[in-house]
Amino acid sequence: MTRFDPPKNLAHDLPQAPYLFVEHELVLGASSPYRCHPGDHRSFIVIGGRVRVESRHADGSGHREYGYLRGWHAEPGATYRFAQVGVEPAVVVEAGSTTGPVHESWDVPVSPTTAAHCRDVDSYRVDKPWGHEVWYTNNLGDIPYALKQIHMTAGHQSSLQSHQQKVETNYVVDGQATVLNGTLAPGNTDAVIDTDALPRAVHARRSGWSSAANVLHRVIAESDYTSVEVSTPELDDVIRWADDTNRGNGRIEVEHVGARV
Image (cartoon, rainbow, N blue to C red):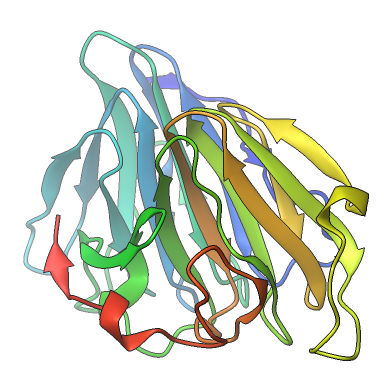
């Protein structure tokens, strides 16, 4: 199979990113090398075309195909590769931890030494006043990153928010949004924010941004909008400075309907 180019770093605007977030582009017939990362979880979402994952489990099993906004987790110790299939090039985003080495081989797959598997991402859905999220890593337990799909309907906006610990990077999959981002949050949580004074930028497909801890940010959907977001794992760490439906800080339990998509 045709080899593909080195991945594009999607968290380049963070001086020291606490997670991996990269984009792989696969032309027709392209494949990654066989890979194994003994100490790290990795998660993959297809954002264009179709991909076949070939994993070498200890029992010899493990071939699956994934299309738009679906994907897989590669557990620590799993051995796998992924390849473009179908009639159009494929684009895949990869997120994960970076605590150890990644072993790669183009010619001979690394023999699996554990029962580690590649498995489907989760489809846990969180409904929002502006759309919904899909928490892809909800089925991984205690890991050092979280991966989401975020969908916002045209004309809606997220809360103006910040996080005390959470760091996040968003990458647009479809649509266009105006993003307010980059100003440090006040120390006083009762402060009123002048949103017109905040830096803003328009982001379309295959562009993105990062928000460090304690930075104010908001997304305004100019059209129906979908992104993939990777972050540190503090998903309930939300301070809402302004919200169109007057939601408070933190986790909103009624939004967690647990539906599967």
